[in-house]
Figure 1 (cartoon, rainbow, N blue to C red):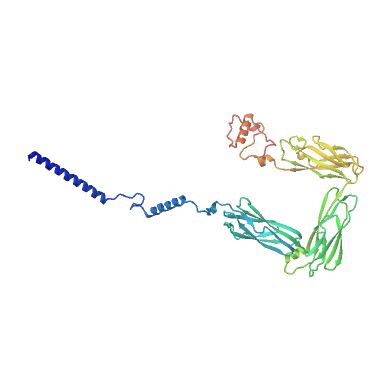
Figure 2 (figure 1 turned 30 degrees about the vertical axis):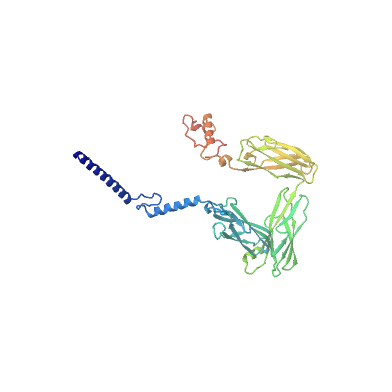
Length: 469
């Protein structure tokens, strides 16, 4: 074998040995470092809380992917629900109770909605007291109690008193509760509270009216010690004892003439010596019984209303509107009825207004019955006390006088004008007027106006149409 062949053979053997060593070393390295599992392996530096968060999110994701079981439904959140207030017994009928007692009742309030019910407050009408509810915040299905007390002292006859519960229920923000029943007086008056003489011709005297006063409690005895008619009372009375300590009569009659075409109401206090042991408030009510006498004397011709009332200070620039059309600016209108009482065949010949601006239209409904349409009445305080004269053919009332009374009100512009916008002075330029009107419509804040466009301050005068600043 030649030298060259031997050298080539040695190189070939060395090359093969190198290949074998490289291949063995690569397998050993791969066995020492196994590949990481991306989905299951956890980094040793990752904190435990993060691991739990990832596991929880994976569980939530799986639960979202799972279909809902048949027959089950997701429950809404209480914070997202709607509260609904309801009273178990909104009206409590206490029947007939003596007017020396108090009526107490517990109104039960429930939340039948799906949200939290919040009760803000409870209010009552006169004569009724109420305690705040035991709970002001009710979860769905919960209930609470509103304790209420009605004092019947001094009352008589049918009674209805309400209680209002305010809450955040969007459909029923105000829930009404009610006491209903009859207060039975231990001393009864017939007629009760009001003695009505009615309407009658002024030259005639109405029939007397009798009030009977009785004790409804067998053990309660009393005497009428005084009948206080008050001051300037045109009525008189006569007291009669039917049964000592139990039954009395008082007859009222008209003692003098009444003003014509005026409603008269006079209060009378009937004082007694009734006594209820241990009930001072009820005793005081029984010792002072109130009654009112009412009457109206009619002249030969009646005018309704008896006074023509004019509102002053709330002028409407467009004027009042009648069924027939528009009134003049700054005026009003009214209807007056003139009706015959004793003389039903009279005629109205003329109506004389206090100022020439006022116009009067006479319309006859039937014989002796007229409607006057009084138009273009100036809203002016100078009319106060002046009279509208109505001339007739009646021998009893050839001339009737209707007095005018003015009532002053604050200007409407001050009550309803937008805040922050100053009305223009009377002699302001047209350009400035347009600018301010545009700002009113757009709701923008008023910008300063150049002094070159402003009128001289010395020339400005206050306007009666502008509200005070």
